[in-house]
Length: 431
Image (tube, rainbow, N blue to C red; front, side, top):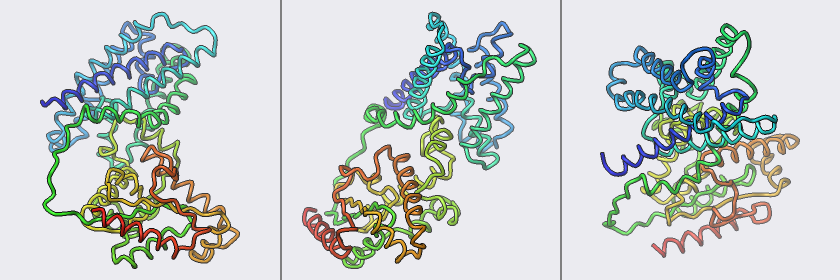
């Protein structure tokens, strides 16, 4: 085990304790516990075992149930992750009991204090999950169990996870009714935790970037054998601003390739995702908050995700990086400015327009009825914003992220084309 792998394990262990402490505080808020511990909390109410001990038992049960759902080759290929669930389960349960012991003094009286403790607990839990994602070295049994089910039945991880959490809550309610003659351990706090932890994970994850140098080995630097002459132009654009048309003009005049709709076929080849799915879903997510709830409460990194949306984004990002190494080109959309943010030979352009100019262009270029153009512009821009900000953690259209902001409502596309061509030529001279 090298130093960086050891550091990842240390980070994961810290994250495990933070997770457990967050769950303990949520539980001590007395508004119901988180979905993942709802069953174990209810069981601890009418048995001699603690919530932590029941957590260990339930997680080990998940490990056993995974075996018939995995093929022999899958188990062999993922044996390390599979076996790690056992010590992780033991530690996690112990940490929960330790957290409950440390928080013995938390006894909220007023309802507002219940809410405050609950929200603090949710924030701590989210911080722990984000730390686990950053460590990217192991998974807890509940999460791994969901992943096994997702792979076995070829279902979206996020929806399987949602169904899994709901099932746990229902089982907790049933146990409570049978053995406690009422609903205990599942309250409004359970719902609040399910809804807010994922979005919190999304918003705090970018702040963990400072761990990257600590847990990742420095990349070996290679001395280029020849001088690179590749300059990439990325064009992000509001709908109706003419960004694609501008890209076509630039590519034609400079004699370089344009990549926009071409990505659909390239990504389908690389990812195995159906082209019709890519057409419907690329550069958009169904709901920013729903995506956060379904995916960002997961302990998986984006590269390990089973979500088709995530697979699509990762595949497009890899293709963008490959194209940047291969040739000079124009890339429209696909968060290319973010994917290539560390490449010094990139010209990042953002096209925007006033509403009336955008409406006229949509009607003339895309054949959209004029009376429907405003709603269509708002809908597509909203999808692009959600997609960009979800996957990059940065604000779409923020001037500081781009080299050039062009108002195509005031500046004609041929003029904008000449301006960008001039920047491109100057960039080539600097190489």
